[in-house]
Length: 496
Image (cartoon, rainbow, N blue to C red):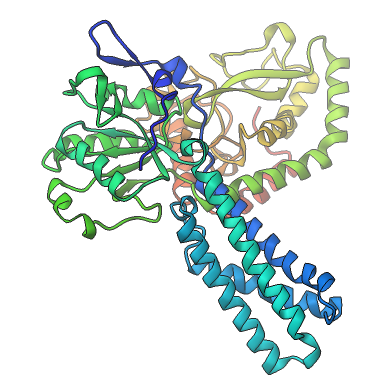
C-alpha cells in the first residue's frame, strides 16, 4: 500500500486557523531526496555479481574434488555473464520489483537456474571432464542460489524498510476529485510501494483536517511549481478529468521546463476495468507525458562519467593549479579563489569556484557588468587565465561535489543580462536549461557561443544549443564536446 509516514506531514503542511493546510517551503526543503531507482538497481546488480563470483570460489575451498583455480575462473566468468543477462531479461532490476521479495527472488532464481544449466551444457559439450566435478558443481549451485535468495530478501527488507522513504519516489497528485481519489485507491489495490504520495493539490479541495483518503491536502495547484523548485517531489500525477484538456496541456507545458516526471492518471472510465489498466516499468498505472532528462541508467552513466573526468582532471591539473595559485598571490593581493553564486540544477543556487582574475576590490559578484576585452579590472595573470580558460579549473571540485557536470549548460549568475534585459525575460524557456546540472563546458561553448552576451540574439543562440544538448544527450556527445573543448584550449582561442 502507499506509505504515508506520520513525520512527513508536518514537514510539508501546517494547518492554519481555518483548518486549510499551507505549504511550508522552508521545512519542505529538509525532506531528504530518495535514492534514485537506477542507483538502487545498480547496487543490487553489483550484489548479484558478487554472490555469483563468490559462490564458485567458496565451493572451491569446501569441495574435496574442486578443479584448479584457472578452470573455476573460466566457469565463473561464463556464469556471471549468463546470470546478468538472465536477471535483466527476467525484470529482476525493475524498480517496482525491488520492493517485492517474492517477485525479485523468483526472478533472480529463474536467472540463476538458467545460467547454471547453460554453463553445465556448455562444459559438457565443449569442455573437458576436469572442468566440472560433481561435488564442486553441486556446492557452487547451492551456494549461488542460496546466496541470491538471501541477498534479495535483504534487498526487499531494506527497500521496504522505514516506510520506503529512502527509496520510494515522492509524488503529488493534482486533483482531489473523483479521478484523484480513484487514483489513490488503484495504487493501493496494486500494492504500490515504489511511489510515495506526499500530498494532493487542488483548488477546490475542502476536507476535514486537510486529508483526502489519509493523504495531506497541500493547498491550491498554484503551489505546484514551488514544490518542484524546492526539490521535494520527483513525480507529478495529473488526476484531472480528461475533459479539462486546456488545463492539462497548460500544466504539462509549464512542468516541461523542470526536472520532474509528469504522469497522466487514467480517465474515469478506466477505473471500471482495473485489471486492464496497463502498468509502466515502475509499476505505476499512469501515462508518461514528460520525463526528467538524463534519468534512470543514463543518470548513473552521467555521474560515473563526471567522477572519471573530474578525478583524472584533478590528478593531471593539481600541479598546474598550485602554480596558478602562487602566480595569483604574487600578482595582486587578495584570495586565490573567486566564489560566486550561480544558478544550477532545478534553479537552485550554488557557489561556483574560479581562480580570481580581477583585482580583489573590483571583483564582480553579481555579474551585472560582464567582463569585456581589455577590461581594467582584470589583472595581468587574470588576462592570461581568461584567454586560456585556466581560471575555470577549480570547477573540477564543483564537479566532484556533484554540483556540476563535466559537460552541460554553462551556469549563469542570477540577474545576468543580455543587452538590457535579464536572461529570463529574453528567452521563454530559459529555465529549461536547469533541468540538468550545469557543466564545465557545453555544446554552446564549443560552437563559439560564449563570452559576453551583449545582444539578445547571442543569448537566444546559446540557449538553443543548451536545449539541443539536453534533448539529444548521449555519452558520445559528451565525449565530442570534451575533445573539442580540449582542442580550443590548446589553441588558446577563448573568451575573456
